[in-house]
Length: 191
Image (tube, rainbow, N blue to C red):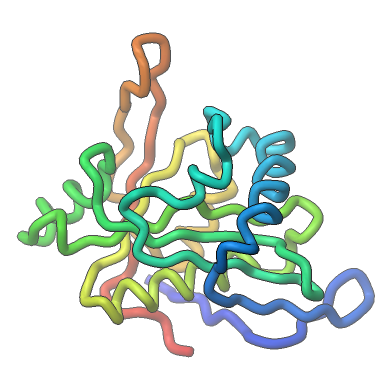
């Protein structure tokens, strides 16, 4: 499957060069990340269920690492890499297929890009960073996404991620959600 190369440095945007960078997230970023997440939720409905404490939701207990993307110096995107948890479908699906243990997978999650910052390949850059970090840790990157998030699924597939399965997951007695599980390519994309 084709793996997309993600350019670094300045990119062309709205008739001018813009500066996009990806760096490790620090505690001071959480407020800005929560603001961006709120804008994404209003426009796209992600996350499906708004968290009571958005900054806490951005730092799950299984956190391995987190990154932010900046567009011209302002937080414009976010991604987390986590250890596999009991509610994650993708690690178990990947492990069964690969003849591995679910703990050998790392989950890419909490990925979002500010609506006003889209079109600058920020999502692809964040995915590349998380994927590289997982491989550096000797873990295979996987993820789960709600099936209605077709833009995210299209990004993952464009980046060479492979659909493992689409399943129904019960999130509460009143809520069943269709979830698509993906696994990254076996080899990380080149820099």
